[in-house]
Image (cartoon, rainbow, N blue to C red; front, side, top):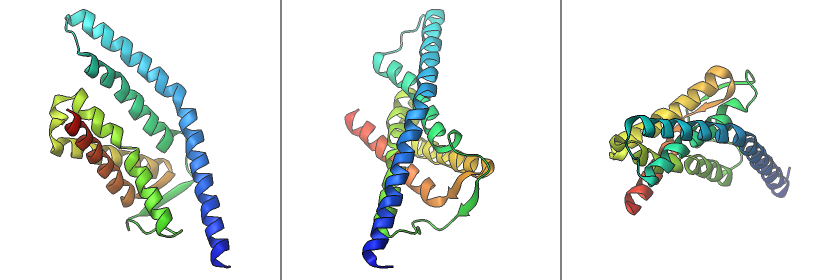
Length: 179
């Protein structure tokens, strides 16, 4: 197999992965909208009962957070075929396909967690500490990886945990910068 044939195969597999991810995103939209609507009405009910007014920015973050979490869980766990993959990969950044594929995969894992780093400190004042925000991202990533392993719908990868946590920190830094 020549180098150009290998690159074509890698690009083809990469495009298939991107296509699959986009379809998963589209499939996750209805559940996200449902969760957002339910959250919105629960927040309105809370405001009426307590008489407390929640500032607009925080209200928006409170509605978007469960939508975002549901979306991530849908894409990473629930829309995948259960019982098909039971693997643990403890060596980070060791993927077939070369450095370009590793970088793209790592960036995708970081980018998907940036919104969590922005939303957490707005929703919960305790998350305004970088340490707690870091811990939340790390634990959420561990939850996803553990669910993938237990349900057999993905590989438990330390690389995902590392890059998801990095994405959370990037989101926190963005929030901190524009706060």
